[in-house]
Image 1 (tube, rainbow, N blue to C red):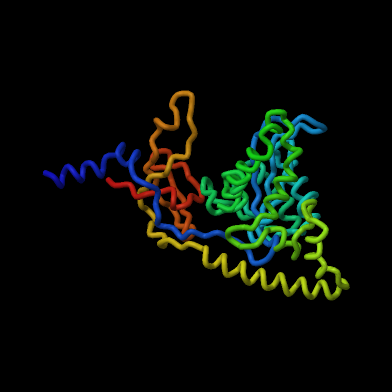
Image 2 (image 1 turned 90 degrees about the vertical axis):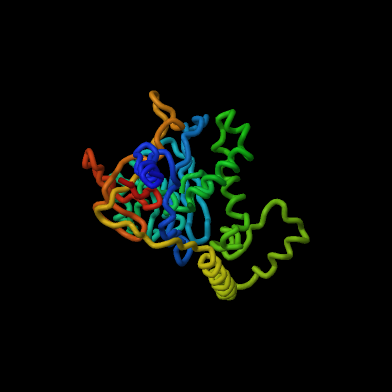
Length: 325
């Protein structure tokens, strides 16, 4: 009798939909790249209160180098594909060069034909993050809370904006502080690399208004002929890159391999937002069941809804768990 009750509870659809944590059976990969601006993560933060000025800025386009953690912040009027492509090309690519890969989500600004054509023309491969799994696009979101590098950066960005621009947000002039926030972040030692992003990109620390006359002597070693400076700069950067590579290896986390199989029934973690009819807190945590139709990789699978046969493409396995029946 006890075993029958236990089995009944385990197989209860509503119990499974409201209980249990997300799967830990996944290999956690954060793609850092091998040199500056090889891979960049791109995302939006906003909407913010419409900025008052020459342009009615409403969003921040965030571009983060996954290797050095160097960030560029661009106030933009909209999150349209056209504006994304124009700003990314004119203000980032023409400044830092063409990245080999662009990490992004599958949102309309990044999946449209216009943007796809642009990334194809500049020779950059589209690496789309699996839907609802910002961990794969880890960096730009320390600043905004949306990608493990983008989403990690998104969290930091949010804190910095609140700290530095509280009055500017109230007065709708937050865009005036964006460059300051970018400068502060890029010149703060990163916990992962143990260097500032600015140093890893430029091979030196910037001279700031806070540097006194005597402290200025620390910049004397830069006063050499360009040829000698270039050689010394390369040596310093090589040492820094070796240290960064070691830190990144030590910080990389690996969980258990994917043990899901084709044909298995699973529940999908519910990422839906609140609706007019039901708040998020009253929604089921898990929905389904779904059927695994394909194992794409160690970390992603394709799912088919058992009832509607609708295909959910490229779902990360941390969002699914076995359905018991």
